[in-house]
Amino acid sequence: MEKNETMESEHASQNFQPLNALSTLKGVLTETEELAFMNILFSSSATIRSANFGLTRKEVEKLLHIQQDDEVFFSFLTRVNQAVSRYFQLIFDERRDQVIVMMRVPARSARNTLSKESLAILLFMFYQQEVLQHEFSLFEQLLEAFGHETKKANQKISIAMDTLKKIGAIEEYDSNSYEKAYQLTAIGVHMFSDSFLRRTAEFSQSNQLNKEEVLKFFKRYNIYQKGEEE
Image 1 (tube, one colour):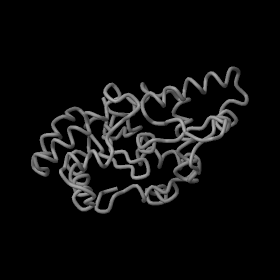
Image 2 (tube, one colour):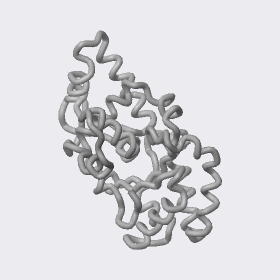
Image 3 (cartoon, helix red, strand yellow):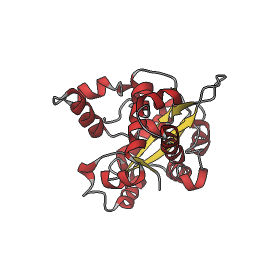
């Protein structure tokens, strides 16, 4: 259905009735807000909007019958996430003007969606763009990082990139340069769970880190809206 958030294996045994969580929305949302959430959920499906996932803030505000009202808009996001956070995450990416719903899935299911090559490329781009704050990643950089010792590297990396584009995790970066470049979408930024990033950082550093150190390293505090739980 919606996009996969990679590797929340500790919740695998609990995610057996995700639609039950939607019934709790009636207690925290108005009828108008509930309809807005369902429209975002619908538009976040790859089969509905192709590469155009989710809604813009303006589209959401139109559904909520508001206009540039930060308090109402972010209150809506917070209350939805408080109600359904075990199974879904409602995300607003301000830079990309994208409001989407992502579904949490067990690690085993996520591995069926992404190959290890696609996952490695996505993590590399995540580090470049979310940690180092690069605006985009060049295809030649990916080829140098992953394919310089591999036969038919160009073809293999292109296939992995196509998979990431199909699930909406990356998009081609529009520039005046002749070099092919790619940019993470809101989906790609939020594919990795905190536990996955913690384990990745621990493995690379060969020692155990606490959550705060990992989040600081990946500069993830700026993606949480005020009042939301981490």
